[in-house]
Image (tube, rainbow, N blue to C red; front, side):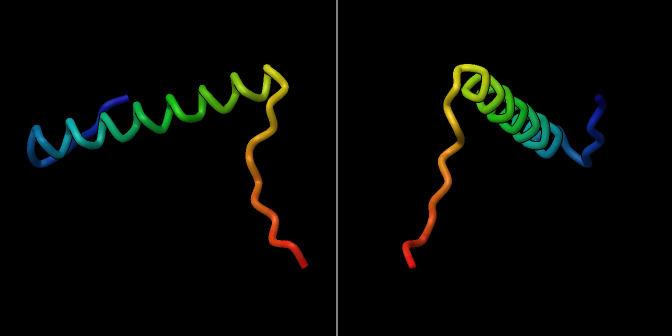
Length: 45
């Protein structure tokens, strides 16, 4: 995947954001495989 940016800082930031998001999704998938459910906050009635 290629990210085009006007400046290297913008490109580096966008890349790090993508990597962080991908890592978060991978962590979530790993937790699901381990039997952990994602935390869901439910408001008591």
